[in-house]
Length: 265
Ligand code: ATP
Ligand code: MG
Image 1: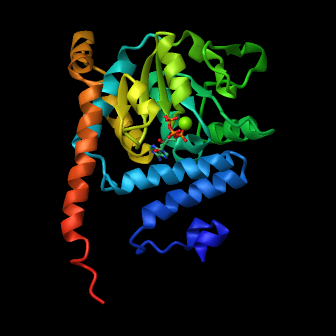
Image 2: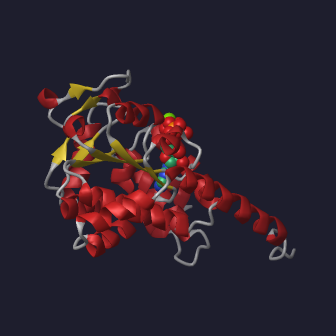
């Protein structure tokens, strides 16, 4: 079946889990093209599991976080959007659109630097229309303190004031925070170290969060500086994480009651 050959054209639209399968196949295709690392498949699976127990929809809490993140990005002097393989495979066009609206560079930053991967991701972003891609100029890479992995090497992130890190690793979020950067994370796991270290954590699937952010930024673009500052000031990430956990609890409680109502053998 389609799962075995990774070809998403054979998934019937009527399949009850069509969207989930569609994005799974994008990740599989990404792995075949070197864009996604093997470990990226496992990370995607962890994300899927959290999405499942959040009801696979963007909730009010995530919407508030997306609004605060949009305001912070509009206020930033030097915003940078960090891109890894999964992000490039799932939302290439949408992340490029965000980069263009904000005039912010997309910086490729990888944990697993297999030969040819950076080039593969660069190609995907260029095909989606990217104009400003960083992290690809070896001579411009500098190390950030407090990090041993490949992800310590950065280009424009070094001087950024706000860094958006979708699907990030906790170590780097912590290191960037300690350098005084404001961090916006997109992470379906409200308990990951990334989610807990970030200034604004969007607990939502990147495939829903980025398009929504693009729409919101267009709407907020003409707001005054003080209006944007007020949106950021009102946002409290600790409350956001706790409310996301509460949503999961409530969702599971409802599902506990409903679980067998639709299963009649
Ligand atoms: P941390 O390093 O922050 O403690 P982790 O080690 O548990 O996190 P990683 O593999 O480093 O996890 O990062 C992957 C993260 O990305 C996971 O928390 C996963 O829930 C999240 N994730 C995966 N796919 C998506 C997606 N499509 N949208 C949003 N988040 C996702
Ligand atoms: Mg990790």
